[in-house]
Length: 239
Image 1 (tube, rainbow, N blue to C red):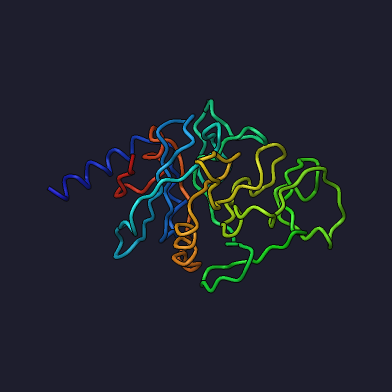
Image 2: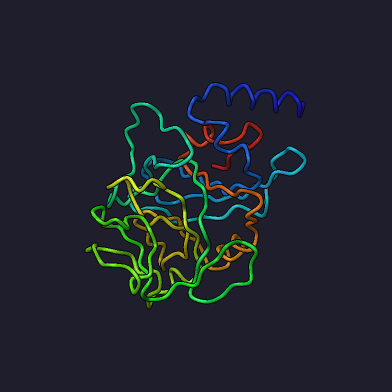
């Protein structure tokens, strides 16, 4: 029976043309986020790890808060479906859907983890001004020329960035395609983000401590109607 189920999942995966197998061929850790619809700002996160050539769940699923206007296809390792209506762009309040590399972890103080991690200061800025040469990059503003009018401070009074993780959306820095996408701590009262994926401090630190740079971790997130097309055949997404 198990072999029949696996065969059915494999055949189903062939029906979807959006997942490029090469995009995840080296990954041994996946963070998978599923929402109910393109407009939903609530999602379910589940971690997976590849062991003995089979994907297994790690930990339990938990709720995350997404962009206030839902999701839109981002720029990452996936193939965006031809004619897709929901496309992520700067300032749209949508979190990016697709397959993404993960950048460094970050926070306001040191954290003893194996994964690359940076402590950011008040003068560290993530640039969301498309006209800047630093667009979609985190810079030390004391060491660079200021050619931008808007930015995201990486350390401020609120603790949303006390711990976080950079999402590799729009790595080519295409103007107006969206910038400064992170996983970080959620705001009170379930307030949606403007494009990031947020969760509790405990959940965020568990992820940071679990990540292994040698296992090529990736983030895969999409609404339930698309998530199956982005995943390996033996992962059944949680809805």
